[in-house]
Image (cartoon, rainbow, N blue to C red; front, side, top):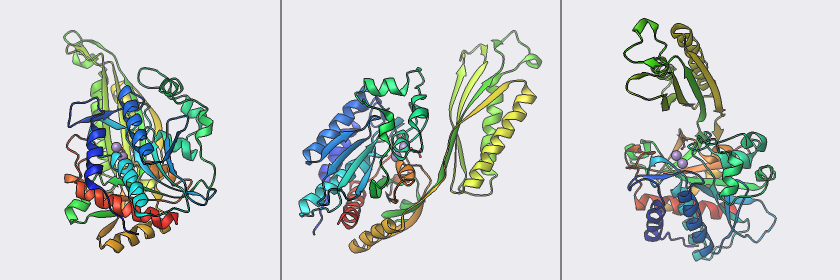
Length: 412
Ligand code: GLV
Ligand code: MN
Ligand code: MN
């Protein structure tokens, strides 16, 4: 079997998908179930159909493109990622795993390979938490770690319920039916940009992921007292934004003080009400994202944040309510898939690093029901979730080649 990746076509497709965006290029914004996301999904589906794959979507819009294997009832070998993009993002996060996965399948088809296990490309719905507040919505439902009942309570920031938004987007059926049957996958492999600097710094072209760090996030609502910026004297103030500022720094200190470089904490949203220059902030909403490779340490940081919130609330006479949105365990990769990826790298003489993914991915949740592993390619400066995110066509093609080889090993 001789595999060849069509690097020019893959690059062109990545650029073409980037044009479906609600931000001005080079930024990409593609939030789940917006008209732009739906047009990007339709375009991606066409590319899959062009490759002769049978495409189906489930009730939440997870999209499966299947290359039927000769053993019809054998468990599936899966690959894929997401095409939704956070506001002001780049064009490679997720997309490399979807279009690179598609090109890997096409390369296998061109080589004359015939899979025994069906190979499926999966485009997950809403890996990004932008719209419904929780990341990996589609994969959580597929794995059953999020129940349909809890998912039905999700709504976007305009109050539109997930159920209404998804059916308007054309995805009907019961959310209960999204969960995959036990034993559906033989293996799942996700190709992704590293979203960190290690591969580039060490000048190594590939990373085989052996562990995915544990993410947690919460929403914090601070309520104080508003009023006139001239009239209310300083001793009488209960300024919600000043309380939030203290809490944000306490969150930073909790992560910095954990004793481990692997602990990270971010406050990425700070909504201030009423948001007027001459009005004391009465209400602030924060989002908090905490991650660690070690679950106990991550949870310890979450407890410190809670304690800091209680202390600041008492000291400043403001109300601070925290709501945990998710607190997930880390995942270890499946040894057989790590071995297949390593063997594929060795076959082509590509050096690789064994590494931890600090970002979360849909593979984290698929790991709850199947063996998974991920393949990382470098991205310039380690930049991701910003418009200058960049992976070179050569690095992407190399990743797709190793993915194709790995899929072949797993599917024969
Ligand atoms: C994924 O986008 C993450 O935030 O890790
Ligand atoms: Mn992302
Ligand atoms: Mn991603």
